[in-house]
Length: 334
Image 1 (cartoon, rainbow, N blue to C red):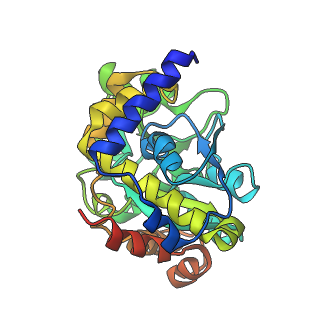
Image 2 (cartoon, helix red, strand yellow):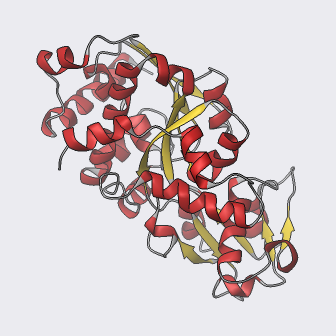
């Protein structure tokens, strides 16, 4: 990246921060105490919906972080990357993190970030989830996030997901390509996949988690941290979360600016897909929705269909910490 592009990116973000009143003063810093570290590592993957994590870079600098690193993962392995110490913080889907917590993976969920990024597509013969009876559904693998979500949706309308749906996995071909080729009947997509399917006029949406209940009542992306980092770096944890939540606000209020920056910074290639994602999904819900309710909702349903054995209370006790979120809700009032 050229020096001019770096300067432009930082200038634009500085304007966004100033316009939103996001600067901090010495009194606020003194009240919290000194940062335990000025280095932070964040996860980077192909998804668009985690835009607040990408847009937070300059906001993290205003919080006192000097060395900010985005560690790229070609696939979504967020929990493993956080637990293994490759990154300190990452965004993750609620249903993705719950079995990790049950399995003892040392991560801590800190907040809900946004609502509505996943969409279930079907071909012309499918008008609703009940029509998946006997149909083929493509997923990357059993136990993947898309497999879990379609299973929960099918069970919600009274289908037996294991018996009534025909699951298709192919390690050599992405499910979206099978859907485009007409080799499967349904496909669960995450940004930018839904935007791509609409552009190509392939299939139609059966469930949009941004608007269709009960899925629209709960967070999609959530913020998590390495458990040991959160325990030993409480000041840094709060400041990281504050920067990300402020960036989330800007995704809601200035989607065009955020979309342009994450494209210019190389986080995603297409501005139109990024802008559509930011405009259509709920980045204005983190104050309103209850993050613990999201974990409880998915944990209950995942236990009912056999993905986990633990109670929601055990998952919440072992893998969440809402102290920082509750403080920031009071501090960052709309």
